[in-house]
Length: 228
Image (cartoon, rainbow, N blue to C red):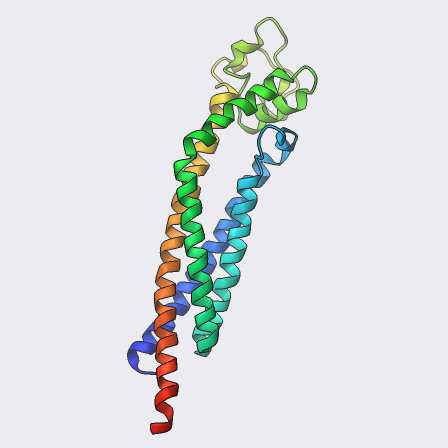
């Protein structure tokens, strides 16, 4: 290989290492997000709340596997493996862009669903108080719209945290309602998912370009080999 091809080879290897790192970060992010909402599975009939975290983890796993294959293809200068890597990465790149655009366009609709989730937990709290308790402990909130929602009834201990043995209205006056707290939580994480997806897609695109360059250079060298 000439200097340009060698440069592309090592750049592709480095970029795949970056993609691999990004894939691992995506998996970690999805895992943390899943851990935050795992106790809310009883709300699945209202909204598949664990769907997005699981998709994020799956995407992270795919990115990591493909990046590892790309590293092997680049360092071994394997044309077939590099072409397969480039094609798969291109498909993954397109799908990732579609997902990011979907999240971007449907963000408002998605966030509006948060109110129905909290409303379901609130209206069913007398039959199943666990759902509202989970929301109040996980998101450090109290009541549907604020602690005043408990006016005339006992404030649950979950409003004061996981380890609280008692809770009074005065101690939770400044706490936000779970409707707003839950919505803010998803607003933040959706933004992270969007921009992280864009960054990863940009790195993938660069890797695809260099993979195509290396595959083309390797193929040309094989064609010219009999004449050397």
